[in-house]
Every structure is written in C-alpha cells, then in structure tokens.
Length: 301
Image (cartoon, rainbow, N blue to C red; front, side, top):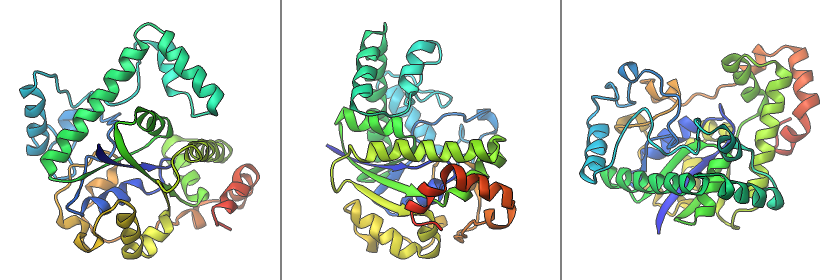
C-alpha cells in the first residue's frame, strides 16, 4: 500500500509554504493540490519550476506516461477532483460538507442511487491512484503529499482505503485567515469568520473519525517561527529521516500547483500577521463574536 500524506486546513492557512518545505525532502513527491482546480488559461500558467506549465519537462513526461497507457491526459482537467459539474444533483452530494455517521451513510447511499454516481466516484479514485503512482515514480519519492486541504476530499481518500494515509492538520490564527478571505473573496468579516469556523468544525468532525496516531496537528505560526523543529516533527510523523531535508527549499526544483506564493523566488520564511494592523476594532469584535471561542481553543488569544 502506497504512502500518502494529506494537508487538511482552511484556505490561506499556509499549506503552500508547508508543501514547498516538505518537498525539499528527497523522499517526498508532490504537485501541490492534487485536485488541481481553477488553473485558468494554461497558455499563461507557470509551473513553479519557472517555465510555462505546458512546456515543462515534468508535465510532458507525466503526459507521456498516460499516453503510453492509452489514457487521456489534460492539464485543464486531471480527473482527480470529486466534482461533476454536468450533473448538478450528483455534484451537490459529492461536495456537501463532512457530517456525522448517519448523514455520511445517507450521502453514500444517495451517491450510489444517482445514475453514474458510483462509477464516477470509483473512476475518480482510480485516476487519483494512477496519478499518485506516476508522480511518485517520476520524482523518485516514497511518500506522496496532497496539499488539497479539502475535508471532503480527505474523507473520500480515507474511505477508499487504497493508501497508507497520514493527515497533517494545519491551523492558523483565524483572524489572519479571515482577513485573507475578505481580501481574496470579497467577504464581510462576519461571513469570513463563519467560513473559517464552519471549515474547522468540518475538519474536527473528520479528524475524530481518523485512526489514532494518524493525524499531526501543526500551527502555521510555529512553522514560520521554528521551521526546522516543526519540519523535523512532521518528517518523523511521516516516517522519514529528517536529516535528509534541505534547509533551502528553493534549491529544489518544484512542480507545484496552487496559489501565487509558489512562484516567489525568495527562500526566506516570513510570518504573515498583517491582520494585526489591517483589521479594524469592529472587524476584530465581529470575528470574536462569531468564532473567537473556537480560535481560543486552538491557543490563539
């Protein structure tokens, strides 16, 4: 059974940074977010190695491996995301947040009853399995890292039982994440705080159902303030020799999909706490009202 590590977190919690740092270990293979959605215009999309993604030697080699097996390969749709946009009813079932055991049984039964639902789900799992195998082989690793963050996706991968799965649950001060939601998605603070809270509540429901000893809790702030110690702890959790990691993660060629941070040339790790000066007293009061209690449970005062 192949080794699979998964980063679980809300968006804007530092998963891209963690992915780059872990990818500097020779035994870790990754393309960042395996679900690979919203890449936009591929003619203008840069791989994190610095070349256009369609001209990148790694992605061309991956496409050749698919073609050698008689399979279609399309960077615009890797076939690894559990989305079915042409079937709204099935898509809604697939994307629903992770719930308790009763509702998850209802989801599984509904998916099986909808025409094509079970086949699509199994085909997507098989596509994930193949892509993980090929990327791990091409990059010469022993552990594949999926930085997709999505709790529903992790639930599907866990239920499939096709991998030896370990989960890295990454947390960031909710005020910083909420500020990013406001800036990037145009949300009000109330909506941003609710989104942060709902996502973490979903993560907690899922983590409670994962095997004991298979979840590592990390804080973004610890990763930035004490990267060596935090990475050593993470690599040990993944069963890897921490002595083999590189201190400069930019010294390694990466082929990572995700946000714009992957294209920055600096290897310096900087803690982003702009929320401390950017958020107004009213913003902070709103966040505290909506999600302050949960944020404090994670140790943020």
